[in-house]
Image (cartoon, rainbow, N blue to C red; front, side, top):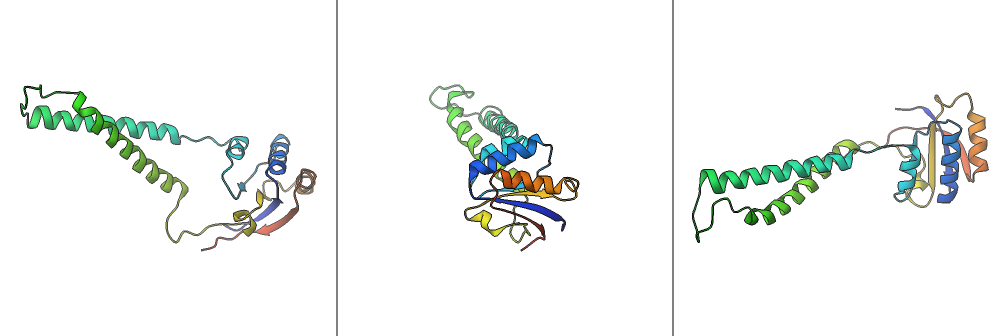
Length: 175
């Protein structure tokens, strides 16, 4: 995956956000934004949607239903034991175990889903356009093949909004 990309480097998150909104308003497609720490405003401004919360809800629902079904089967159908005169289907005794196992199910399934979706695994090759983005700089990357007609206009917008550096680079994967 090696293409020519236009890279804008910012030293302030407010300048990055101003440039992001201006670039989106002008119709340019942003390839990726790299920040030294998570910025939820960037994800919202780029218009990316996540279905992660829905997936976590489904995992929780399935986990709770599975735990309740398993406990009902074991306590009522398969091995009913009458102890202390209590009914075998004593639902309040199932609540604590159901909550704990549901939380465990949501946590582990969400971690697994996130790892698969983000393609995080040992030895994975990655693309880091500017090494300063892991330290203290904010980097906005554009694919030149998509924005080739208005490249100089895009550079002017980035510099006007506070980019300390704008340059082209051929991105290659690193290990």
